[in-house]
Image 1 (spheres, each protein chain N blue to C red):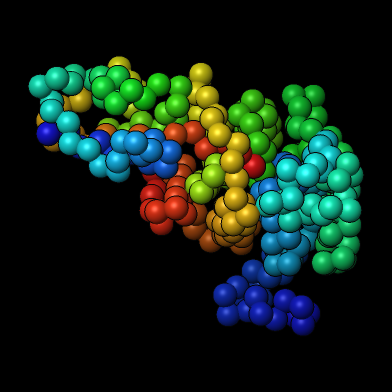
Image 2: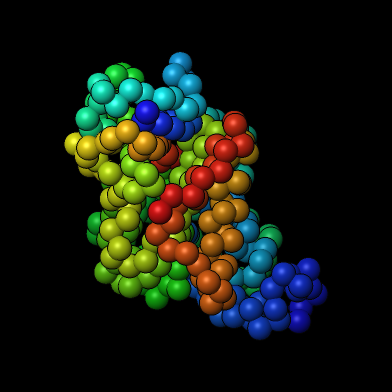
Length: 221
Length: 73
C-alpha cells in the first residue's frame, strides 16, 4: 500500500483501494463541479480519468471554480485540469479533452469507462450524456447546483430518470452559484461514484437534494 | 387539507409549508395556479412522494412537494 493512500484505509479496504486504481471514469465538464470532482477522484486514487470541456476561464468563474485563477483567464479549463492532475497525483492516467460534450463525440468520450460523472451546466448536454451512457451501458452519477442548492443521483443505463427530474419545457432560472455549493455537490457525487466503483450498495434512481440555506436534506425516489 | 411543501427558491415570498383547502383544488396544477408558480419553474412535482404531473388529481390529506430545477455545474 502506497503511503499516499494510507488514510483511505479504515474507510476503504486495501482491496477497495486497489480496485479504484483499476477503474476508469469520465468527467463531463471541468468547471464548478468538474474541478472538484477531478480533485477528489485524483486524491482518492481512481486510476484513470478522462475529462472534457471546450470552455475557457472567465472572471465570473473565480468565485467557485477550483481550477480557475486570475492568471488563467482565457485559458482552456481542460488544460488546467491536466496540469492540476499532474501536480496532485501524477500516478493517475489523466486525459484532457478540449471539447464540449456533443451528440457527435459523447459515445466515444464515455466508451470504456466504469462510471461517468455529470459536471455539465445545461439540460440539453445532460440529455446527450445520459443517452451516450445508456447506449454504452455505463452508470451516470448526476450532479447539479443552483445557488445554495445541490442535487446528486446515480442513474443506471436507460432508466430515463434524467427526463423525470428535467421534464420537457422546464426552464433553468438563476445561474447563481456560491463557493461552497460545487464542492458539496461534488462530494456527494464522488461518494456515490466510489460506492459504485468498489461494488458497495448504491440506491439508484434516488435523488439526494440539499438546500444549504436552510440545511434541509431530502431524498426523492 | 392539502399540505404543500415548497423547496429552495419556490419558498421566496410563499413560505415553506402551506395548508390548502381541498374544496378549491382538484389537481396539482390548481395549486401552481393559486400560488402563482409557473409550471416551467417546477422540475419535480411529488404527490405523496410519487413523481406526478400538474394534471394529476389531489385530494384531502395529500402531501404535494414542489422542487425548482437545479441544473448548473
